[in-house]
Length: 143
Image 1: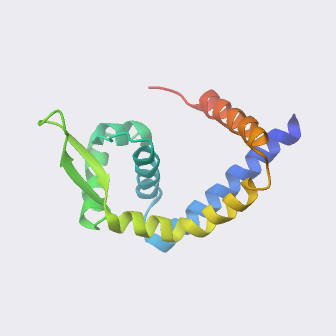
Image 2: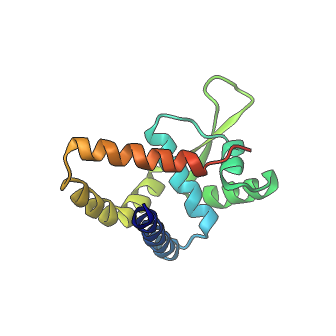
Image 3: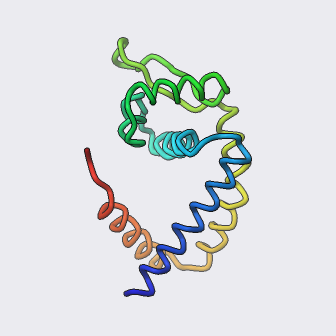
């Protein structure tokens, strides 16, 4: 079991290095990139994201979240839109520019990860997914 947890730590370290490289290439700080990653994941799941969701995810104040979103809107990476069912609320969404830049930088890595995944059969991958989902749930805390 120790070798499995070491492998998880090694993967986490590799992902950190990959994201650090992307930060520099995209001229963003860690919170900016984490916001784009969160929005990409939630968009894929069909989930809307409010500024409050960003603050909760990053564990930062609403004032810091406003500055972060203002910065990403000004750089053309995000848009603020009215919430579809609550006219008083706002959601933040990725722009096409943001999607293109994010996937241009992440695409090579994604292709490499897909190549690795193709070496395993569906049953193996289901086990890996269950393990990773359980790990994620075990270290995720709700505020």
